[in-house]
Image (cartoon, rainbow, N blue to C red; front, top):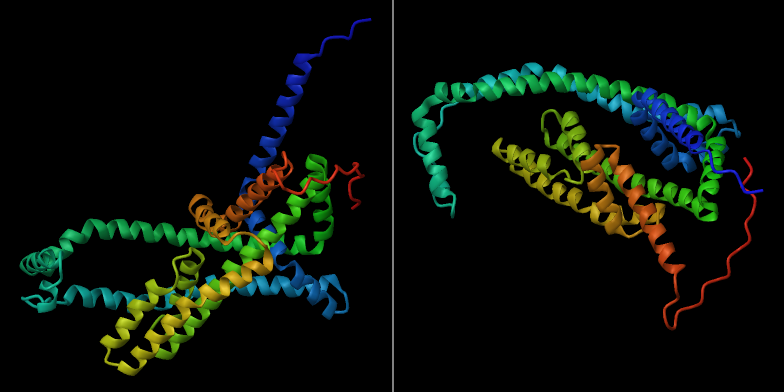
Length: 370
């Protein structure tokens, strides 16, 4: 009896139903995707710390989860709240600075060193003369449209800060749940990966965890150390708004821009105020802080994942540009998994002359138990 032809409409409708179910589920979970990714990255990178805390707390998981959740609140929610509070509390000083800037009158002639600058000296001299002839009122009128745009941007960002704070709270709650039942979720993920790719799929899950931990140690911890040390230097030198500038430097270090865009103007301000000793101290301190990542970051990354540094840094920068802050974890993980899969595929191909022959394939085994 000839075999019956495949039921093509039934298979097509089944695939469409599954695709619709997946898209609908992702659409429903869309508000939680960002915080969920952040929570997963934080839990994976700090899981060894959770286990150490649990051993110190008489192997009570709920106590360890409570401690780790409080740490996340201190590291995520509290700094953002303090930064916003510092901005609001110094809003009068910012307004006075803006008013003082509008009352400032430039000298009629530019400094001699400005005209002596190569290439750009004549252009700066002409711009100085135009600014003097236009007067402060003309400059304010010229900058009014930009001020309106800046005001609208500031209002948008204030709303963005509120949304970011809410996302951090949701991230903390999801991370607490993942801390509590992390082993079960990890076992389910390993089973799913084994069903997709066998032992190689399970190895990809392990590699993703190592890449996340390496990026968290190498990028996040280095940025935190740089920002804290730079903030201590600003506080000792008497720079105003040191707490807010520390948060700004942390974000710049996460974005791989470093703390120099904040430290150099702060050092110039200290010199301008006439505090030469503190200015020299802050200049030397800035050099130490900005060069420490060349030593600390590679060591910390190697502790988490034995991957090429160029691959990790490319993933950090590319992921940041493509996905925002969460991309500093997504980018390196995707590149690390792709790199490992390509490397394994190349090694399993035809052996090169003189190369060691490949091992015989292992018999299939049962998926790992939960």
